[in-house]
Image (cartoon, rainbow, N blue to C red; front, top):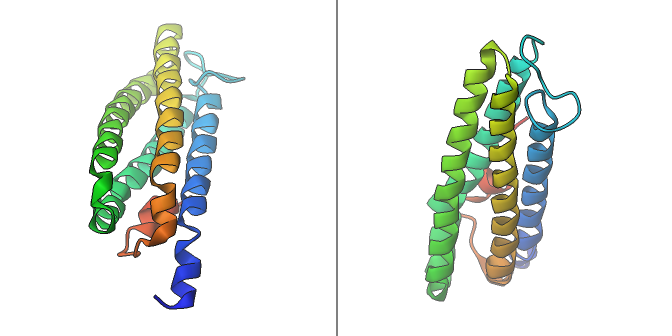
Length: 169
């Protein structure tokens, strides 16, 4: 492997951690959006319910693209060079499935809120976002710990890095 490629691959674990930090920040902003649990949370009839949907759809798209990039590219390449990580990858993919289900529920609640965020719907959204934050944090920490060293040992970029490490605005 040329030196330039080695330099690039040694940064994969740091880049993955930075991508996770970006997703954490996006979730924090979503939780602060009207209808989330932060200051200025939306109330029925305040006109801010569209903000919740916009924030939700943007965040959900970014997190989904990240996980699909891992499932469809990074993990396959990782297993090609490190087949001993199969059980780890299986656990990470199971987390992705669980997170996708929570994201679906959040998206449904946000769409339902377009007519106004009622106190009950706000509690449901907050509960889902709290659960999402908890599983994301656990998942991200495990992933960074479990595959970080393998990434730094050298995993070829077969196109997986873009959806996994970068997010559109």
